[in-house]
Length: 151
Length: 151
DNA sequence: TATCTAAATAATAATTATTATCGTTTATGA
DNA sequence: TCATAAACGATAATAATTATTATTTAGATA
Image 1 (cartoon, protein in one colour):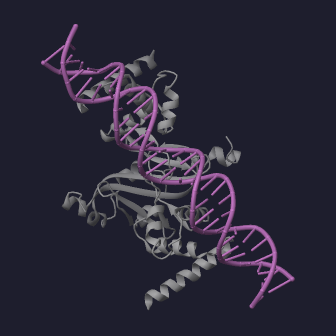
Image 2 (cartoon, helix red, strand yellow):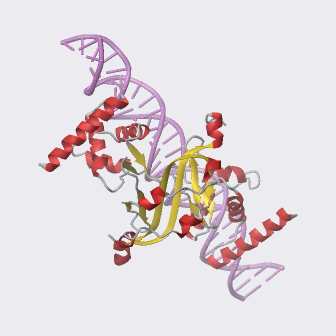
């Protein structure tokens, strides 16, 4: 029931975003947005496609790519900074940062208000105007440490 | 003369690294390493290939990729965190961070000792063991601001 | 110094990730 | 309801990277 309510609210918000940004609200876009809003694992386009196929059997991978690109240009989602070749996405939300495990590759969010509030080094001003600050921490997560990386 | 000396020292260091890590020192590897050590623009594999062709006309792009991969595995170079599809590389050196211009795409190094010395949020410990901390700042550089991004 | 051998190279082909083209379908506004 | 531009799915193309293989070469050894 609560889940059902959340879905409803999410859908309403998404419909409004489409109207505001001036693009059409399609079933495909709604589901892709929902999937991203619900996911906490920063899925790649292919992952999203795979997850939605049961619900939208005709959904093409190409539509997923196009839709993600549209969402990104309108600021609804962002690409994650990685060294991987596959792009990874997340719904735009509160300012946060990422932990990446070198063994399993999992990307985890974390929050760091102290950092967010810290002033940048003064010489950055000479470079230009900064609009976003990302921290990425690399290491080995507990699960990999304990299991030796197999999971 | 000074340049010549630097080159010589660099080559000696590289030769030693090869011996230590146990891989062969080839002309190709030396030149790729030199190119990366001299570059400040975090070149992609293709860029390095293009730059070296005049000097090594038979150098294959594939060798550049393989060599970069070898260097990376041995910690001589690192991939830069980006949202681009092409991987960008830099020689391993002092701890530093990156500025990325959203218009021209240029990646610039900056140093931020205050950050490097700052403790991570305590709950990170529950995630695992962190071995590297990267900051990436996005914005618009002075040149793009002034020129409207054309250059 | 010449010889040997495993490692590295270049050429080629293959794979993976993403984007473009185009004919068909559909959301939205009149 | 209808018209139309936007979005879709199928297909093909491109871009980035990796694998295969025959040839070459760095570095160890005689």
